[in-house]
Image (tube, rainbow, N blue to C red; front, top):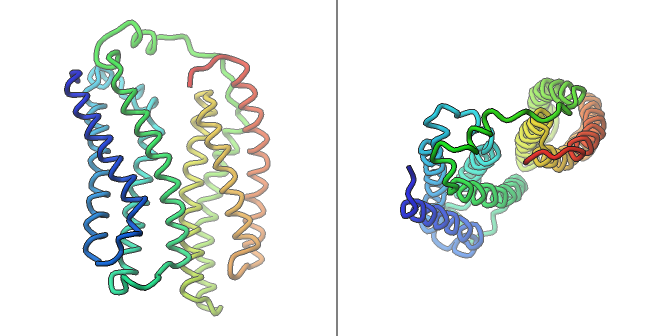
Length: 299
């Protein structure tokens, strides 16, 4: 069992690593004088994120819920933290590798490509979510009820499920959206290969369009995941997150339909279909949130 003294030590380590991550994100641009200094900072930052991931899983393993075999209940409660932390780690490593590769031999010059700038924005946005979800989870794991057999745990396991308010049309739409986007992503990759061979695509523009496409993929995965989870579990918070992510997804679809470097007629069509999905999902998101608000459901 996690003792009070041990928990305080673990919490201090976790918050120290997050504080270092925050300071590195805030001030790393001010120390780009010698290539070795930011390299060491970035390595420590990425190792710190990895350590935080390991620590949080060790805390999961130490709970009575995990030892009793109720892993599904534990994962269900902290899915958001696991997903956000993993995504942030991938974005962090990608950003650090990219920026070091560009600036290693030109530390005093201004090297900031469009693709790097897009990745920078997504990395910083993901960091905010990482700090929030991770801090929230570490504090939740300090609850003594997670480390002993209790009436609360029995109630959680045997409690009467809430009334079924999940929207079948929304779940079907998200399922179809998943498969359609998979086809869409492959089609866009093939179209980029086609355009790069036949059209005067500059490397900077091609890199920007490809990076944004992969970021679009990440946003869609998170949006559909949280949307499906919120709908099936009848929870307002995941559904709201999915609704918020619908904004960036719509912007991306409009970008690839109208604003990317070269737009083919096929791309106009496939992106227009995506926008149709988004319109119907927006309506169903709204209906779902109204329905879930009509009953008391713990988020």
